[in-house]
Each structure stands twice: as structure tokens, then as C-alpha cells.
Length: 155
Ligand SMILES: CC(C)(COP(=O)(O)OP(=O)(O)OC[C@H]1O[C@@H](n2cnc3c(N)ncnc32)[C@H](O)[C@@H]1OP(=O)(O)O)[C@@H](O)C(=O)NCCC(=O)NCCS
Image (cartoon, rainbow, N blue to C red; front, side, top):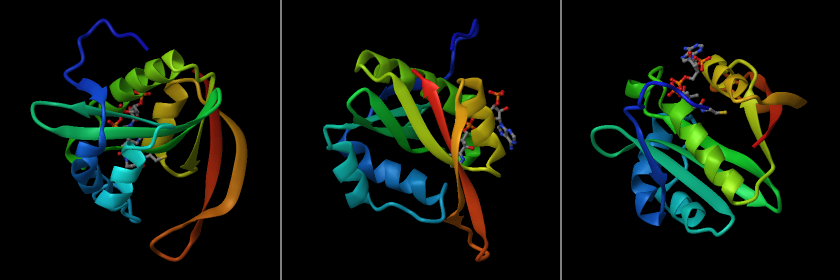
């Protein structure tokens, strides 16, 4: 998605050396944290395409997708809580989708909690549409179950 204003965020591909930073960002973004080892494995895995965004200093947002043939699925995306609402995820997702397109990906899928308003706004902006629903898919901290929406967009 293009913008007339230059983005303050710099995007770049992530590698296994970024695993500690990704694990730290994941821990402050989700209730089920992924370990440094898990990130190292993912970031070193050939089918995984991973990008990060950095502001003045280190990586403050990441997005990881796993590719299978001409499709891919977003495994996780997050921005540091202190930097949310400033367009970082939008910039990062645009960069990521361009890389996926160059790698030959045609369709991109993801799952999102139906109550996650910021994520839904982000995905809507990039043209994702609902293609499925998994009732009670997520376990919430309060013991309730939440519905996952399955979204797809053409990259
Ligand atoms: C989802 C997330 C990655 C968005 O990151 P971000 O950098 O704040 O996103 P952006 O600033 O680019 O904004 C994306 C959209 O969300 C909207 N938004 C931001 N905060 C919002 C809020 N609290 N409520 C509703 N919409 C909101 C923005 O207006 C923007 O919409 P627009 O493109 O129509 O203007 C971030 O909130 C996050 O890390 N959340 C925790 C992890 C998570 O839930 N990941 C998604 C799992 S599917």
C-alpha cells in the first residue's frame, strides 16, 4: 500500500540472530509466549519468510509467514506495545507482502480472534476477507473460548 509520507520505520528480513528480540516482543504481545529456541527454529526454516520493522534502535515489530507452494500463512505478527497505533504494522505488512509476492506467493491466509479490533482493521486495509470461522478456537486467560476468523487475501 503506498503513502505519500515517508515511513519512520525501516523494514528488513529477519534471521536466526533476531530470535532473542522476537521472543521478547512475543512475550509482551501474547499470553502464550514462544521461546528463543522456537524463534531460532522458525527463523532458520526455509519455508518461513520473516520480516521486522525497526525505529530508532532495534527491531520493534515482526511478522512471520510459512510458505507452502503458492500459498502462505501468517504465523504471527506483533508490534511492541509502546509503538502501537503509529502505523508500524501497516508498513511492515506491506513490505512483507511484497516479499511474499516476489517469492511467488499468490494467496495469504491467517487466523485472528474476532474481537481483535486493531488486527482486524489492519487486515481489512490490506484486503483480507473472511473465508472461514473456528468457534471456540482460542483459550482466553479468563477461561472463556474465543472464535477465530480465517482470512485470506490475494498478495
Ligand atoms: C495488531 C497489531 C500488530 C497492530 O500493530 P500497529 O502497529 O499498532 O498497527 P497500525 O498502527 O499499523 O494500525 C493498524 C490498524 O489498526 C487500527 N488500530 C490501531 N489501534 C486500534 C485500536 N485500539 N482499536 C481499533 N483499531 C485500532 C489503526 O487505526 C489501523 O487501521 P487503519 O489502517 O484502518 O488506519 C498490534 O496491535 C499488536 O501487536 N497486537 C498484539 C499482537 C496481535 O494481536 N497480533 C495479531 C494476531 S492475529
